[in-house]
Length: 122
Image (cartoon, rainbow, N blue to C red; front, side, top):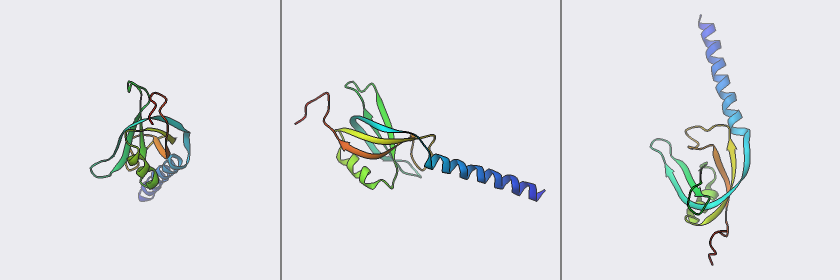
């Protein structure tokens, strides 16, 4: 009986490890999005994650929410600096996320300040 329970438990742990590796290393999509950076914060009670939003339109009708992994220190610093500015984000979409990574499935790997197509800021 103990042997069967150990086999079942080992199988479940193995499946979880395979799932974690799949989510970690197999991206669903990659791309870029541009918009005004309207929110960037470090939130959470037990596990803190970096979360942000860009507005992709004049009225703010389309909001793109994203997460940034803690290891992306340069991206975090740039996002803090570019708050309220028009930015272009390079992201990787995952099949799923884990509570210690962030709230969304979109993870930012690069950020650049861009010229807004709506307003000419000099």
